[in-house]
Length: 260
Image (cartoon, rainbow, N blue to C red):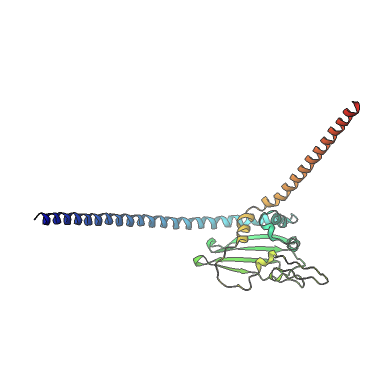
């Protein structure tokens, strides 16, 4: 009898524990479901905010456009502006070979344009004056953002003049010249003929730097060279002053020695 009573008590305790566990699990499920509803609400607000941000960006892109055009017109009057800005940029300067720098002297303008639907892509265009290197006056690289993080990239095929091509990043030998450059040219950035029309995931660091760093305020980098020249001049002047001070001190010491 006593044993049966003990078994009955243990059974009741176990049943209470099971019921209690089911009660706790039930509350947990309800809390998670409630949390998910709140999270869904936040996601909806974030989506609306993103749409509003895009609308504002589109609006201000239209406002910026005539100002960028005015800036480009002014830049045309400054010799070697874009070459200087590129060569003063810590990352972009590493991409131009000596031959590229000669070509960049003919670079008249640089343009970065977002698509009307900002989130779908943008283009980067280089506009050149008539030059001895290629037929094109404008070469463009276009980035189309598609679904699932895929980017479609299309570039202008550059029509190089005879003896001036840069296939596979190697400058061709000019007629009568024994020298050839084996450095990779910046213009290989436009070589995508093997991938033209293909869809592939890519992170283009050069495009990011041009679009997000150089393009918004190229004057910052153009002025870098001027600042560096001023610093060099100041250093030279300091050295000259130190030199002259030192010589004067030496002369005084020599005079003192003579008097003694």
